[in-house]
Image: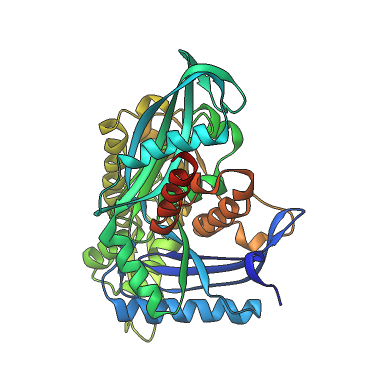
Length: 407
């Protein structure tokens, strides 16, 4: 049996599916996946718990399936937070050094000054990520440890969330007899899994189109500098198809996955799609391809333009030189060209980067969040942990340690 910190368990609670991965740490290549499970979601809307009992039952089912595959029982999990509910802000703090060498204690003081600004009961800090330092007017410093100077300014990307959102998740997992080890924003996790080093460095936006929501996260200078989301995703496209074509949800989802397209000027728009009779459908279905395309394009246009507005409203558009699209709907035919036409930048379809010791079956777009969570956690020993994973308990610990060191 693998004990203690060697086990990593992550839980991605989505609107359409709940995913659990159980892995063990590996000295040679980060982690090995022991067990996984993905089941239909219940009691969740756009990542928010709306029915405690239904969500509890769905989570327990998912975790038990993953435990059976891993031959392990888990008690602690890291939980993803949907970017639609996150608050993304950039903040700075100054520290006078009196020409002394910068040490870890100095960086902790800067962090504490940032956290003081978020000392409100209704807000929980999820990540505090430093993306730049200025030392005596010199910009572009990413690691100031050991340098000497008089004035140090730290710039942090702070991702927070309304307290009630995480309180309800915590209550639900308490009913599942699971402890929350930490929270990770979905956009941060997906970026860790899908983006290449140069994309993080030179400015890219990661768009994840999930089941009940879609998110956009901007990476620049090897850091995430913005994340946000909207409560619209693949399930809304499915519902549109069902409503307009008078279909049940099951057939609408099937048709979307098999024949859905957003390709501009598709040459096959006059084709007729034939769906054989089934137990739910008494007669053969005949659907015009052009009508199906129009339904999907209308909703995808809304999702894309709303995400584009998020960038414009926060002055992030200038940083984006490329867009990477992931999530279940990234498999729609023509999505690359469609997104590129709206955002006017290069686009590629993203999936988790391959890793030694991990089966190819996990490097799919619908596993971007859990795979990214595993990567964040397995690499956390290279960084200050509080800059990766924050919760209320860890924040109090930071404050207490700082007070002990400085008073």
